[in-house]
Amino acid sequence: MDIRVLRYFLAVAREENITRAAQSLHIAQPSLSKQILELEAELGKKLFIRGKRKVTLTEEGLFLRKRAEEIVKLLEKTEQELTCNLTELAGEISIGGNTPDLVLQAAASLRKQYSDISFHFYIGDATDVTERLEHGSLDFAIFLEPIDPIKYEFLSLPTTSLWGILMKKDSIFAKQSEIYPSDLLKMPLILHRRIGLQQEIAHWAHTNLEQLNIVATYNVVHGSPVSFVKNGLGYFLTTRDLLSPELDSCVCFRPLKPSLPIRYAIVWKQHHILSKAAKAFLEQVRLQLN
Image (cartoon, rainbow, N blue to C red):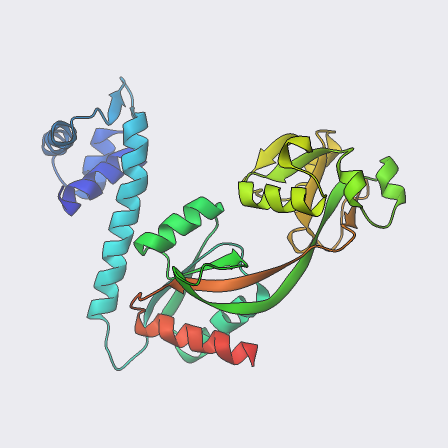
């Protein structure tokens, strides 16, 4: 599979039109159509549904787009690192996950010293971020501890937060200052879909997962989770750091009791060769920790 053909495929997927894609690539439309047909023949899969006005991706096409974007990005990143002036620091540093202040401060500090360094922050669920870290399109990721020391190297960050429940202010539990294990068993819960996290919450509540009334799950919430609560879907289990300092007037947050703290770490692959820029960034993180 040629990288050039992958770029052609991505252009068609982006434009949703063979003619417009050919114009953006500065090649003839028949030539582009032939390349896409040959790609489909090579893979033995239909990648596009061809309509009168536009083309849309099939399920296989959607999968290939995700992988092609990762491959092209990794190639561009590698080319950039290999061709940069070795006497200067330059290039892009990619970080996945929710980024704590200390990491942003390290990024800002490095940028002040080296203006040719840029950062790419990627937000996705834990599975997606882990996958991108594994195949190299991310240099670093922010994970919840504990971290697997066999697979990853990491630096523990001072960023901590507490688990609690986001609820409507007229809830009977809003009268309490804290939420106890017995309370959790009475609530319709909205939890993160990670089984490990759900099991940790069940263990905290001295019960098993089947006894929790889980009405909904999520992987990543873009924006505020307040709407889940305001519309009466359930009680939203989250950490205080993921909520805005000033909550909507109709909701409130109550921490778990006994407290269930979380801690974050910045993580990178064991034995992964970091670029010069990534090494300099890691040193800035260490300086921020001291």
